[in-house]
Image 1 (cartoon, helix red, strand yellow):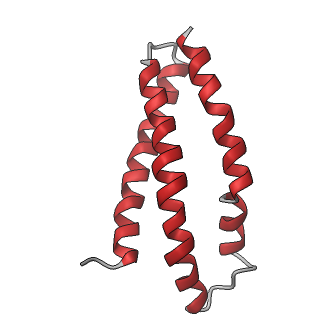
Image 2 (tube, rainbow, N blue to C red):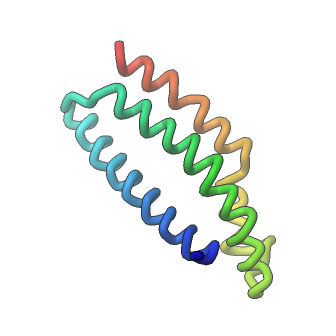
Length: 107
């Protein structure tokens, strides 16, 4: 059985690959190339389902407490910045704006 941190590292690499694909997709959109709207919807679902619900929850449950136990201050850099970025309200605001954008792109 793999450790929680090994599982998180593996999942982090998956997220990195999707983000790299998003960068390519953004370049294609900027260049006016056609992009399948379904692909945008699938990326949004991945970000909401896997990243927000699964990956970040595991970081909160396993990684951040471990870092704090090892001496990384929760209220200082780097964890304070991570907590601020990953705050549920910020993620909700970001997620709310993406589906209408993908739907508008379909038209």
